[in-house]
Image (tube, rainbow, N blue to C red):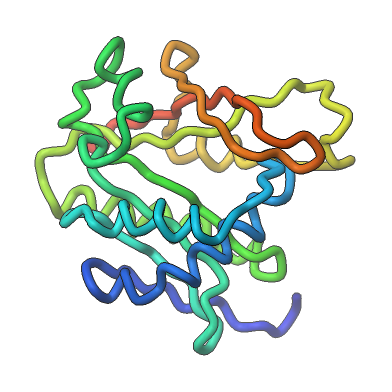
Length: 202
């Protein structure tokens, strides 16, 4: 959208982050409703989920603002502070969970995409993890979808090229299963695979 400003990026922790839980919850519901998550979101669940993130003393919320409106958000926390489902694959066959800083969602309203916000989200979360010290890896998980799924929008471009350009590598041996309500289907189980990168990598 020509002429629109680039969103302002703020890195927040503690109480500053907690003030924006409802903003991030609303963004998650709006963005994850689309492919590939097709998530039929619930605001009460989202509030509880994000509150558990914010309860980690070493969490980070990176928000994109257009004026006073939050138009994008990403989060991160030490993997040891996340739910058991996220830790278990690493405990079984991966870098030690204590050495991994985990990235949660990265959500941005469509009108603000293509302006470098996704890269800024990675920059800020990686910098936060480095600043904490003690972490050798960053990681996130992405839902797996069949290449021939008829629900895939025509011309859809995933984020894999950005992730690979930053040095992230998909780890087929590290996956987990999560349940959520899918639009048009209802409750079902989804497989997500982790992507990892050495925090010291350029």
